[in-house]
Structure formats: structure tokens, C-alpha cells
Length: 321
Image 1: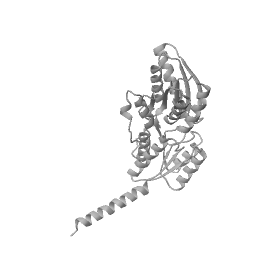
Image 2: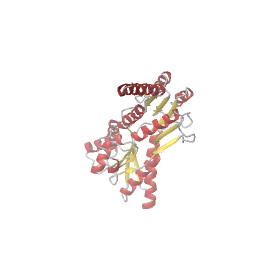
Image 3: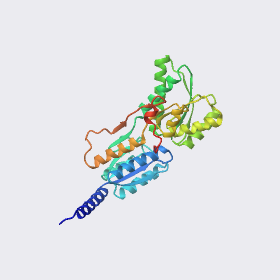
Image 4: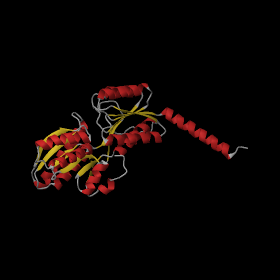
């Protein structure tokens, strides 16, 4: 007679075989432009968890801000037999040939977060709407500073990054539109732009230089929270206490905590966990043949401006990011 113990042993063995088969059939490559910013680390954690939950093997690579290194990483992954590639591209043009090569090799490619030239052959680009988040933040800034001439310092990520361009132009558009509607004229002066490479240390250094040149600044806008957090440190060190701080996107835990305390103005919603999980889900469904044929090549997660009015909705003290 077959015992329960035997049946259980057989079920466990079958589960192990099934899991092994799933892993063998699903090999994921994840390549990031950098891990300097907490946002990128949170994206990695989200994709890795989603892949492992689906029973997939996953290999993660950090290109360390070098697009040629990222190209080599993708080539190595293709050679090792991945069938899913999640890529957060360092450069929208330089990565196109290797993405095309991956697709030609049968790999399901999904771009995540940073923009990739849509002419490349990939399934979809999953990201938050840089333009809409930026516009909402800009609108909030204009309403908050109504009646005060805006003297803005701008902190950008890296030169040539189209996502960064969309973010800053979204904020500028939001400010100018709101000022025109509410005040009848635009009163915005951009005093200077610094490059912080998306990191807190980079934002700190760029802000130090800009504050020295423009001590009359009353607004700092960054293309992500990490750089603005660096600017907050620089302002404190310089004794500047009448500055409004805002980011076009992210929602980093430390920034949200400061928003709750009133030390930071607002940021745009760019949840790395949601972006990462969605990117994997799209690629995994494509691998299984379950993705709708009309799935858009550019997919946006919801946009919002996070301020003191709604920060409790988004603040998670134990969040990775």
C-alpha cells in the first residue's frame, strides 16, 4: 500500500523537478547602468524577487556608468543562453545594436526606466512618465511659490540622458503653465545647471558649486531625489535656509521622510519596485506567449506628485528605496 509519506516524497520530488524545469526554461539577464543610486538597487531587488518567484534563474550586472561595459555584459548573457533580458540602458543609442542582436537570438527584451531608442527591436519600454511627473511637480512648485520670483538651480543626472531631459522639461513646463494660468506671466529664472550623475554625492558637489555662484537661489530642482538630498546637505553647510527642494521623480524613502517633516517640498512618483516588477512581468508573459499582440511599446506606470498633503499614502519606512 502506498503510504502518505511516499506520496509526499513523490510530490516533493515532482515539485523539485518542475521548479528545475522552470528555471532551465527561464533564464533572465538584468543589466543596470549603475548601482550608485538607491533607486537602481531597489529596481534590482524587485526584478530579482519577481524572477525567483517565477522559478527563473537570474544574472545581474552593473555596468558602472560605462555603456561599452553594458554592451559586453549583454553579449555575455546572450552567449550564456538567457531568454529574457531586462535592460536599464546607460545610453539610448549605443545599446541599440546589442538589443537588436538579443532579439534576433530569440531573447525577450524589455527596456526599463531609462529610455532606449524606440526604433530598436524590443518588446516594450516600462517606466514612469517623466513628462507627466515633472509637469505635476512643476505645477505644485508654481502654486507653492505663487507671488515669488523663482530663482532655480537645476541638478541633472548625466548629459545626453533623454529621461533626464524629459524630467527637467516636464518641471519647467509645469511651472510656466501654472504661472501663466494663475499669475498671468512667467517669473522663472534658471540660474544654473549641475550634473550629479544621479547620486547623492554628485548632487552635493554640483550644488556646492552652484550655491557658491548663486547664493540668491530659492529653489532646487533635481531629476531624482538622490541628487536633491545631496543639495540639502550642501545648503545646510552653506547656511542657506530659505530654499525649496523638489525632485522631478522618484519618491525615495529619505526624501519622503523629509517631506513629512516639512524640510523637503515634493517629488514625483517613480516607484522602482512597481517598474521592476512590471518590466519582468511583461517579459515573462512574452516568453510564455501570453502577452497581448497589441501591448504598447511604451508603457507608463501611474504618475503623481508627492507632497505633505499625500505623503502618508506613499511613505514606507522599511522600503528598500
